[in-house]
Image 1 (cartoon, rainbow, N blue to C red):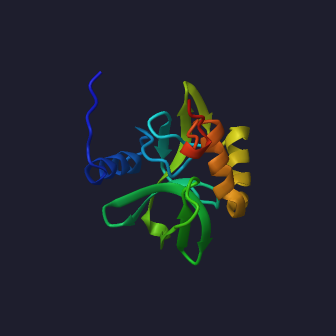
Image 2: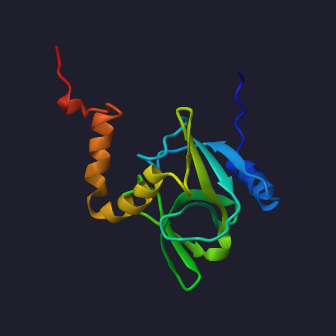
Length: 159
């Protein structure tokens, strides 16, 4: 199968339009900012219309005109949303609530579908991971070492 690469500034507005028309849209995850729960190129993200928002929700937002980001809501106050990627140890996006374009409703990982409204696994992720922010750097390093086998050069054995 041949893959077609389309710039996000062209692709994502079309996705948003479909969602606004009442459809769901499935896209392949790109980037590492949502590790360890969403992996680049492996997971498929199913977005739907925004019914209500809560801290812990994963959303697609147009943080500035034409620039879209998919991250988890960290805080909401006075119509302003702060979000951060699960794999980010620093840096947040802050924008008006009106810039939220879609909400993640399902994740398809290795053929298994997780519905975010009913999956206990994803509800646990959403409840626990944001609270671990102070130690996130160390947990992400451990994840890379154990699951992704990205051993630092200094730890590799030489022959």
